[in-house]
Image 1 (tube, rainbow, N blue to C red):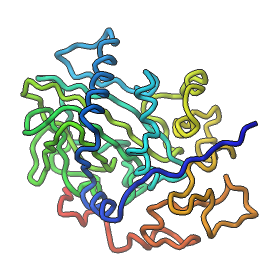
Image 2 (cartoon, rainbow, N blue to C red; image 1 turned 45 degrees about the vertical axis):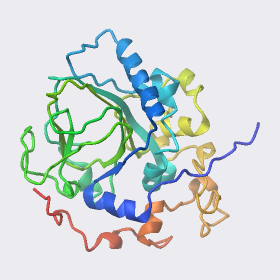
Image 3 (tube, rainbow, N blue to C red; image 1 turned 90 degrees about the horizontal axis):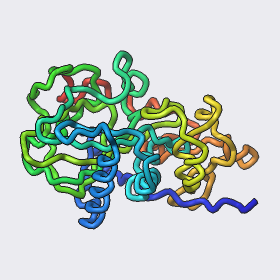
Length: 317
């Protein structure tokens, strides 16, 4: 058997980006895509829509699990443009939670205020600070003004479990209506409260969302990918899909899936502090977030957030 060639983890957060992300719950990267890349993905979106017999041009169209609909979509699973960011949070247990395309024409449906993930017991109950899902967005159409199907969010609201306006489309004081250019990439904390404005323009909003989570959270748009399709993926893509036949394997992946990536600073599979007598797939590897927070290798994470409580944000509802 040929030994697997492991990749070094792609770039992720800078310290300033992480601080801004945790303060706002939302991060914007302008010009992440070139004009040619925007055209490439727009063409893929249009082909995807044209292949769906249930597609109605006058209605919002949101196909899911698009990674299994062609190489253009599978290539985004581990794309170095963005995968390093969720890897910084979830480390060796990174998983693709869901993949979606959004097409929002004039007069199409638009979302009420909500956070992503569970409702009755939200993600924030279990993880008051760190996101249990990060959503990567690629924006393929210019949205220079409001009422174009814009994404709207309440800055800092990922630290509260309830807010004014919940279950309505109503505008709330302090909200931020996102206007951006085609080619922008965004990152969203799953617990952030957000909604979508109605599209009253003649521009059909088109964008891509790939969400990531820890491997032990259930998938959002599939049960298990087919073995035949998985064979078409590279090593990292296959691992990130976490299409294991055993449910508990999501928590304890097989030895051959370690490491997912080599450390981007050292190029090593293990942390310097790791006990070399412990098998690699059972070693504790620090995430970038743990290192950023100054968490001791054998220490708890809890003390890092002692000064920040849910509701501290001025956006708390």
